[in-house]
Image (cartoon, rainbow, N blue to C red; front, top):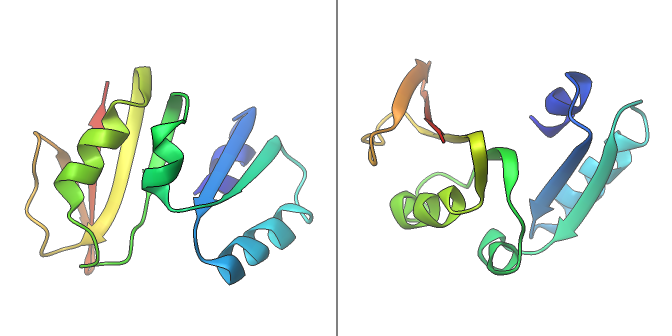
Length: 115
């Protein structure tokens, strides 16, 4: 999603992931694309968000069933700019919360919020 945002006009895309191999792959792929400035943060998202700025668009795809999504979402929404959007990919069995908008794609559910 970060590369897609870059191809559609984002001026800066920040990737945050604690998995080293995933971050290496993302960084490698970024070298093959012409686009915005990319920032790569090797950290868990909660540590990063404690000191993060705010964003126009935030996309999260945490491992299904590993995190409590509502508390994570509340923290992320605090870092969303005015008129920003947060998109959360999760399992289709996830019940919507915090007045999320919902779209389903196969076994995937997308929850999203606009500020």
